[in-house]
Length: 298
Image (cartoon, rainbow, N blue to C red):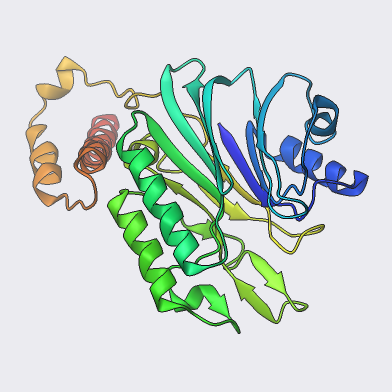
């Protein structure tokens, strides 16, 4: 699944709808999370303007007047929806990725402005994550930064950042490196900037898609950049790698395996470390195999 997140600053406007539809098609988006819809109610016709297909599912949280509002839309061919948990500041949809049977929880976040309100939100999300099963991905407008470098010409609140960092640590969440841009929101003609839009994923998600691409795109009809996470293909199991019996009989076959196993240095969750260790051993065996084939050909 490929993901799109965008603080819309209002769902209306044909130009904005065409812009979102172009993003959806260009990046093969199968799940989109929108914040600040500013809509009290929705219907399929409104969503169809954003989606380049009629085969979609949708859940939303109504705005409070012209403030807030969350919308999550997905491709029904790829995501099998089962339930939703709604709050003014988040919309969590639960289901399975079709073709894999993987249970996944997708949280569309629009955090409040005040520090205490965000702390309450982090605590509640942590409780939901701890009590759940399956993969997790949180995407949206977190209205918080992790470090001072994620703000430009705006005040860095160490207490807010500390709470946010603690939440990410306690929930064991991870983040991909963002490409193309360093910040995601621009105000006052770009004089004030911050990185408050992001994707956070659990170790299991990261382990399945370690090479996913996270990008911040050009903004047009919002002061927030759209952000996309392209997971790329995964077959939900280790990559196939044949080892022929004849190789085992070659002198020195055990050396690259032993050296790779002893030289590997890993960090992070144990399951991800094990996956990376197997990949490291695999790469060293491939190098050894290619060298042996070259020598035989000579």
